[in-house]
Amino acid sequence: MLPNVPHFAALYFGILRAGAVVVPMNPLLKEREVAYYLRDCGAKVVFVWHAPARSSSRTSTREVSTSSTHCRRDPPERSSSAKSPSPLITAHRPLAESLRMPKREGRLRQGRVQLGHKGPSDLAARTATCVAEVGAALSRDRAALVRDIHKRISGEISELRGEEGLRELLSASIEGNVDTSLPFLQYGIDIGRAEAPPAAIEYARRLAQHGIPVRALVRAYRLGQDTVLQRALAVLSTKVSDPNLLAAAAQCLAGANLAYIDRVTELVLEAYEEERDRWLQHRSATREALIRELLRTDPSDLAAVETTLGYRVSYRRHICLVVSTAQVEHADTYASSLARFTNDLADELGCPYRPLFVPRDQATGWAWLSLPGTPTRETFAAAVQALALGIIVAAGEPGSGIDGFRRSHQQAIRVHKAMLAAADNAPPVATFVEVGAVALLCDDVPATKAWVAETLGRLVLDDEPHARLRETLRAFLRTGGSYVTTAQQLGLHRNSVLYRVRRAQEEIGRPLEPHRLDIEIALRACQWLGGSVLTDVD
Image 1 (cartoon, rainbow, N blue to C red):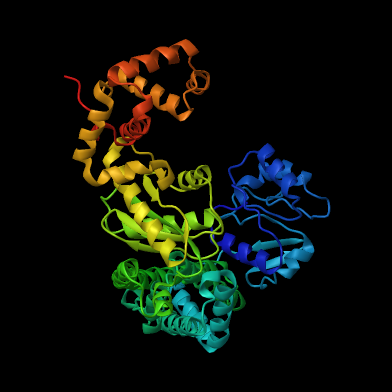
Image 2 (image 1 turned 180 degrees about the vertical axis):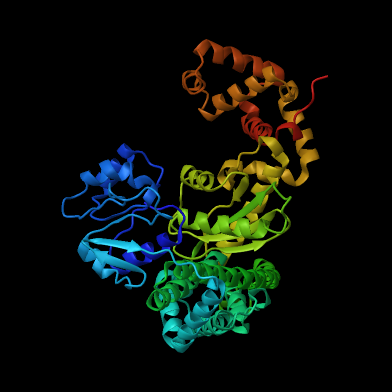
């Protein structure tokens, strides 16, 4: 229960070294608040600064376990003209002894440790010397430090447990960073002059080439930073007993550690991003050329093509998707976001293999997923909508082998055309089964509009009354001409359905039965393509 004074750092690290748990408290807390904290954490030892000792500690310390030994800072007989106060420390005897405070810094008497106030004028010089000694000690134990960092990174970051070549390069990167950083502590060199080791730059590039996410690289540097700082503070605690010097040196070590990591991560992340962009462009161009060739003809060496693509075409069941987004203001990130969406969708659908994705333009990409089965339309749509908003998905029908690979792609392309023609009327997810013949009509939209007008007559007028008639007639034909079933589906009275169907026939200008199939297709075209095939009301 100390304010921001050097004694806090000495007590904090000493308590941790003794194997106890630290519960910091604000010296401005009221008596009842202090009492609550002490009861709640089950405190056995209390270290109190002089200010709250007269008030809060008087009541609250009585409520701590009786196994603790307490003392008041100012005995009643002490003169009020005493010089600068010393902190009150209420301590349990065994713990106080375990802190091993030097006699010149304080004294142990009846369970109490009293710290002196020592503030040498050459604190900055002593701090620099102390930091240099810590840097030298870490340098002497460099091999063990490198092993600890490597063990921690490999144990906590699964993405970095890759092939042997990457593991060896990780070791070289750690060694390079340790060798580069320690002289800054040992010799007081300006950290602003630090450069990332060549092995660290190369390791970042290799991670980008292997598609390992950047978050794994950033976390590796954070774990390395924490490991070095813990080792440095452990060395510091064995060398320094002066609380002022301990606090100053600890602050200097933490600041230098943070400054080096901040400087180096900026450089390695820049190398990672540059390599990722270059690698993605090269890989996308290669993949697109191979996929286009695969869609046209049978390759002479299909196994080699599959190896390059990283995707098995033969003997698998595929579904092709055309994924797109209207948010193209950040064109430099669209490909990675669509690729990430494709990977997440494959996981959501339970695909056993990694999907194949290739960007097409600023806002569109092609993707193939290897399916374990055939998902229903509802399952597929729910998986898409659960992952992202603003991404539109056109899907072909699942197919097996290279023929299914091509056919599903052709169907997905047609569905995507239909969704583009539908514009705002298009749903976020559409499959070839839903679109069907309408997808074929999108190849020539003007001709389709003329045919729809000829088939439906005045029913193609683009207004709300005719939209209701089209919806009712479409449901009526879908139910096989049942007025009762249509009324149930639309939530209408049977007579309302009867009236609307009769009005729709009058607008068409000819009976339904001889032209039933044409009328159904034309109504579906109106549903999907909307204003592209409807006629404006004069």
